[in-house]
Length: 220
Picture 1 (tube, helix red, strand yellow):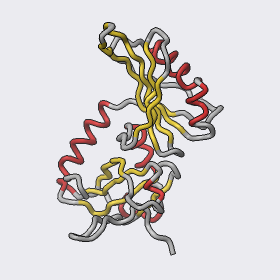
Picture 2 (cartoon, one colour):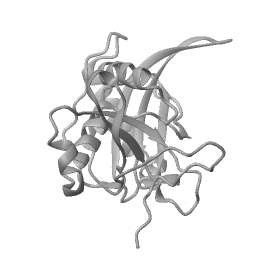
Picture 3 (tube, one colour):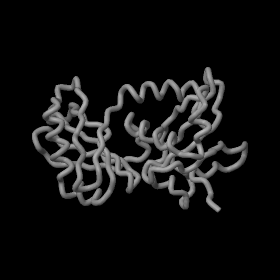
Protein backbone atom coordinates (compact mmCIF):
# COMPACT_ATOMS: atom_id res chain seq x y z
CA UNK A 1 0.00 0.00 0.00
CA UNK A 2 1.20 3.51 -0.65
CA UNK A 3 0.74 4.81 2.90
CA UNK A 4 3.32 4.00 5.52
CA UNK A 5 1.87 2.38 8.61
CA UNK A 6 2.99 5.19 10.88
CA UNK A 7 1.51 7.83 8.60
CA UNK A 8 -1.70 5.82 8.42
CA UNK A 9 -2.15 5.82 12.19
CA UNK A 10 -1.28 9.50 12.58
CA UNK A 11 -3.49 10.56 9.72
CA UNK A 12 -6.44 8.70 11.18
CA UNK A 13 -6.06 10.41 14.52
CA UNK A 14 -6.05 13.82 12.83
CA UNK A 15 -8.92 12.89 10.53
CA UNK A 16 -11.13 11.69 13.37
CA UNK A 17 -10.46 14.91 15.28
CA UNK A 18 -10.96 17.61 12.67
CA UNK A 19 -13.72 16.32 10.38
CA UNK A 20 -17.36 16.70 11.40
CA UNK A 21 -20.31 15.18 9.59
CA UNK A 22 -23.95 14.23 9.86
CA UNK A 23 -25.96 11.88 7.66
CA UNK A 24 -28.85 12.41 5.32
CA UNK A 25 -31.01 9.62 4.01
CA UNK A 26 -32.26 9.44 0.43
CA UNK A 27 -34.26 12.31 -0.99
CA UNK A 28 -37.46 13.00 0.90
CA UNK A 29 -36.30 11.41 4.17
CA UNK A 30 -33.85 13.83 5.80
CA UNK A 31 -32.21 12.64 8.98
CA UNK A 32 -31.98 15.00 11.98
CA UNK A 33 -29.11 17.42 11.49
CA UNK A 34 -26.10 17.36 13.79
CA UNK A 35 -23.78 20.30 13.37
CA UNK A 36 -20.62 20.75 15.40
CA UNK A 37 -19.78 24.17 16.93
CA UNK A 38 -17.53 26.39 14.84
CA UNK A 39 -15.12 29.13 15.86
CA UNK A 40 -15.66 31.02 12.60
CA UNK A 41 -18.57 33.09 13.87
CA UNK A 42 -20.94 30.91 11.85
CA UNK A 43 -23.57 29.97 14.42
CA UNK A 44 -25.32 26.62 14.64
CA UNK A 45 -28.60 28.21 13.60
CA UNK A 46 -26.98 29.90 10.59
CA UNK A 47 -25.32 26.68 9.53
CA UNK A 48 -28.56 24.71 9.76
CA UNK A 49 -30.41 27.37 7.82
CA UNK A 50 -27.75 27.46 5.11
CA UNK A 51 -27.65 23.66 4.74
CA UNK A 52 -31.44 23.50 4.40
CA UNK A 53 -31.39 26.33 1.85
CA UNK A 54 -28.51 24.87 -0.18
CA UNK A 55 -29.94 21.36 -0.34
CA UNK A 56 -33.33 22.69 -1.41
CA UNK A 57 -31.96 24.45 -4.51
CA UNK A 58 -33.35 22.90 -7.72
CA UNK A 59 -29.91 22.24 -9.25
CA UNK A 60 -28.74 20.48 -6.11
CA UNK A 61 -31.90 18.42 -5.71
CA UNK A 62 -31.81 17.41 -9.39
CA UNK A 63 -28.19 16.23 -9.21
CA UNK A 64 -28.82 14.08 -6.13
CA UNK A 65 -32.37 12.94 -6.82
CA UNK A 66 -32.92 9.52 -5.24
CA UNK A 67 -29.27 9.27 -4.17
CA UNK A 68 -27.90 8.52 -0.72
CA UNK A 69 -25.99 11.56 0.49
CA UNK A 70 -24.21 12.76 3.58
CA UNK A 71 -23.19 16.24 4.66
CA UNK A 72 -19.48 16.03 5.43
CA UNK A 73 -18.72 19.55 6.55
CA UNK A 74 -20.28 23.02 6.83
CA UNK A 75 -18.25 26.19 7.23
CA UNK A 76 -18.03 29.91 6.55
CA UNK A 77 -14.94 31.75 5.33
CA UNK A 78 -13.86 35.16 4.07
CA UNK A 79 -13.20 35.72 0.37
CA UNK A 80 -11.13 38.73 -0.68
CA UNK A 81 -11.57 40.40 -4.06
CA UNK A 82 -11.17 43.80 -5.71
CA UNK A 83 -14.59 44.72 -4.36
CA UNK A 84 -13.59 43.95 -0.78
CA UNK A 85 -14.09 41.05 1.56
CA UNK A 86 -17.24 38.97 1.53
CA UNK A 87 -18.21 35.98 3.64
CA UNK A 88 -18.93 32.72 1.87
CA UNK A 89 -20.97 29.85 3.30
CA UNK A 90 -20.02 26.36 2.13
CA UNK A 91 -21.43 22.86 2.59
CA UNK A 92 -19.63 19.73 1.39
CA UNK A 93 -21.95 16.84 0.52
CA UNK A 94 -20.98 13.27 -0.38
CA UNK A 95 -23.09 11.65 -3.09
CA UNK A 96 -22.51 7.90 -2.80
CA UNK A 97 -24.41 6.95 -5.94
CA UNK A 98 -22.63 9.51 -8.15
CA UNK A 99 -19.29 8.78 -6.47
CA UNK A 100 -18.43 12.43 -5.91
CA UNK A 101 -18.54 15.13 -3.26
CA UNK A 102 -20.23 18.41 -4.08
CA UNK A 103 -19.01 21.70 -2.67
CA UNK A 104 -22.03 24.00 -2.54
CA UNK A 105 -21.29 27.63 -1.75
CA UNK A 106 -22.95 31.05 -1.72
CA UNK A 107 -22.08 34.41 -0.26
CA UNK A 108 -23.64 35.07 3.12
CA UNK A 109 -25.76 37.88 1.71
CA UNK A 110 -27.74 35.36 -0.33
CA UNK A 111 -25.86 35.61 -3.60
CA UNK A 112 -25.75 33.11 -6.42
CA UNK A 113 -25.14 29.46 -5.67
CA UNK A 114 -22.02 27.69 -6.94
CA UNK A 115 -21.65 23.90 -7.13
CA UNK A 116 -18.39 22.05 -7.74
CA UNK A 117 -18.01 18.29 -8.03
CA UNK A 118 -14.89 16.99 -6.28
CA UNK A 119 -13.23 13.59 -6.36
CA UNK A 120 -10.84 12.15 -3.84
CA UNK A 121 -12.38 13.88 -0.81
CA UNK A 122 -11.20 11.91 2.23
CA UNK A 123 -13.85 10.44 4.55
CA UNK A 124 -15.44 11.93 7.62
CA UNK A 125 -15.23 10.32 11.04
CA UNK A 126 -18.77 9.00 10.54
CA UNK A 127 -17.84 7.43 7.21
CA UNK A 128 -14.85 5.69 8.79
CA UNK A 129 -17.05 4.41 11.61
CA UNK A 130 -19.60 3.16 9.07
CA UNK A 131 -16.89 1.39 7.11
CA UNK A 132 -15.49 -0.27 10.24
CA UNK A 133 -18.97 -1.46 11.21
CA UNK A 134 -19.33 -3.09 7.77
CA UNK A 135 -16.00 -4.86 8.26
CA UNK A 136 -16.85 -6.04 11.77
CA UNK A 137 -20.14 -7.63 10.81
CA UNK A 138 -18.78 -9.50 7.79
CA UNK A 139 -18.70 -13.24 8.70
CA UNK A 140 -15.69 -13.86 6.44
CA UNK A 141 -13.60 -11.52 8.60
CA UNK A 142 -14.77 -12.81 11.99
CA UNK A 143 -11.42 -14.37 12.92
CA UNK A 144 -9.65 -11.03 12.40
CA UNK A 145 -12.34 -9.07 14.22
CA UNK A 146 -12.21 -11.51 17.13
CA UNK A 147 -8.42 -11.43 17.47
CA UNK A 148 -7.64 -9.12 20.44
CA UNK A 149 -4.10 -8.55 19.17
CA UNK A 150 -5.30 -6.90 15.97
CA UNK A 151 -6.52 -3.32 15.64
CA UNK A 152 -8.71 -2.19 12.77
CA UNK A 153 -7.35 1.03 11.29
CA UNK A 154 -7.67 2.95 8.06
CA UNK A 155 -10.46 4.49 6.10
CA UNK A 156 -8.62 6.18 3.24
CA UNK A 157 -10.68 6.84 0.12
CA UNK A 158 -9.04 5.44 -3.01
CA UNK A 159 -10.22 4.74 -6.55
CA UNK A 160 -9.56 1.78 -8.77
CA UNK A 161 -7.87 2.42 -12.11
CA UNK A 162 -10.06 -0.19 -13.81
CA UNK A 163 -13.26 1.09 -15.40
CA UNK A 164 -15.10 -2.20 -14.80
CA UNK A 165 -14.26 -2.10 -11.08
CA UNK A 166 -17.12 -0.55 -9.04
CA UNK A 167 -14.49 1.18 -6.88
CA UNK A 168 -13.52 3.29 -9.90
CA UNK A 169 -16.80 5.21 -9.61
CA UNK A 170 -18.19 4.43 -6.16
CA UNK A 171 -16.93 5.38 -2.70
CA UNK A 172 -14.47 2.77 -1.45
CA UNK A 173 -12.30 2.94 1.67
CA UNK A 174 -9.30 0.81 2.55
CA UNK A 175 -8.76 -0.63 6.05
CA UNK A 176 -6.14 -2.80 7.71
CA UNK A 177 -6.08 -5.18 10.64
CA UNK A 178 -2.82 -4.09 12.25
CA UNK A 179 -0.53 -6.20 14.41
CA UNK A 180 0.69 -4.89 17.80
CA UNK A 181 3.11 -1.93 17.78
CA UNK A 182 2.31 -1.28 14.10
CA UNK A 183 4.52 -4.20 13.10
CA UNK A 184 2.56 -4.66 9.93
CA UNK A 185 -0.86 -5.54 8.57
CA UNK A 186 -2.39 -8.94 9.08
CA UNK A 187 -5.01 -8.27 6.42
CA UNK A 188 -6.06 -5.37 4.19
CA UNK A 189 -9.72 -5.03 3.21
CA UNK A 190 -11.70 -2.69 0.97
CA UNK A 191 -15.16 -1.43 1.91
CA UNK A 192 -17.58 -0.10 -0.68
CA UNK A 193 -19.62 2.50 1.20
CA UNK A 194 -21.93 3.04 -1.75
CA UNK A 195 -23.07 -0.59 -1.58
CA UNK A 196 -22.49 -1.09 2.15
CA UNK A 197 -20.36 -4.21 1.67
CA UNK A 198 -16.79 -5.45 1.88
CA UNK A 199 -15.54 -5.19 -1.70
CA UNK A 200 -12.29 -7.08 -1.14
CA UNK A 201 -11.57 -9.39 1.82
CA UNK A 202 -7.86 -9.85 1.16
CA UNK A 203 -6.50 -6.85 -0.72
CA UNK A 204 -2.80 -6.98 -1.57
CA UNK A 205 -0.52 -4.43 -3.15
CA UNK A 206 0.95 -4.85 -6.59
CA UNK A 207 4.18 -6.74 -7.04
CA UNK A 208 7.14 -4.75 -8.42
CA UNK A 209 6.55 -4.03 -12.08
CA UNK A 210 3.00 -5.40 -11.99
CA UNK A 211 -0.17 -3.32 -12.50
CA UNK A 212 -2.20 -2.32 -9.43
CA UNK A 213 -4.74 -4.93 -8.29
CA UNK A 214 -8.49 -4.47 -8.54
CA UNK A 215 -10.08 -3.04 -5.43
CA UNK A 216 -13.17 -5.21 -5.90
CA UNK A 217 -12.40 -8.91 -5.65
CA UNK A 218 -13.30 -11.19 -8.52
CA UNK A 219 -16.32 -13.44 -7.98
CA UNK A 220 -16.50 -16.83 -9.63
